[in-house]
Length: 322
Image 1: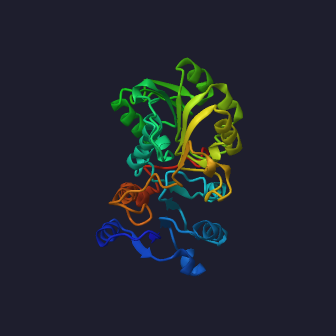
Image 2: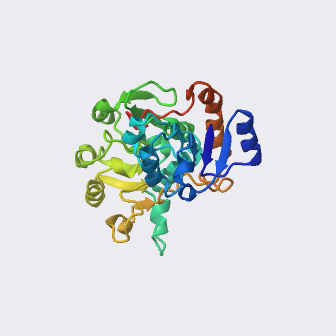
Image 3: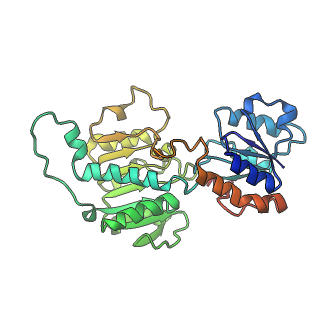
């Protein structure tokens, strides 16, 4: 089987794949001819031309494409319906960036709770003593996958009460209680939630889940979004920030991205925007430049895929979109 790597692999990684029976080709996808594209079984990585050329590949007679390994946890930017119809499987990078993303969440929350973000805008002596301890705040995390669990693990160390909300409501030990997303309104009221942390994927089901009805149901100390911008009705969030229903917001994702310079979110002193960079790491600056953990996910699937096209790790359910 031929693997097209859009993210460069090390010599050792290439050798490991060769030994497993794969032929590795590293190239920019736009530089390949149709004759070369039609012969690719697997694509590893992503580049700016991937989506357009994916659709082109699927239209080619007798294309061999069977598997995509992407560099992100979310896959909502891909043509999922077309890929599913063509029988192409996807594995994502869920878990690879859980720690840096979770630490960005902590940075948001500590900045708000300890008034650090307020001091940033004060240029004269003005003591801000209305501060909170993390264990005073009641926190709900929407999305209990790798990122949500890592956030909860960090917050547990501060003694916080953290509930988890997900599609399935499956019990996870990182949370003091777990609820289905259909039961979220009652759960938020029952636990007197002050902070909502969103790690939900971008799907048709989650689109604009956080809307006016959500933000007006009860006041929030903070709303933090490291999931997808599409999950939030952004105008409703802006209104909630203006009227005080949401006191602070930490947003790593917005809709659209990049956020236009004239968007109202730039004007709020009680909003921190990190521009979809919460995954960043100094030691591994790019999820797009061959982080070892991504290859580990990929290589875990290599033996079974070449045998029977089965993926055992990080397989995406294309019907659900995550």
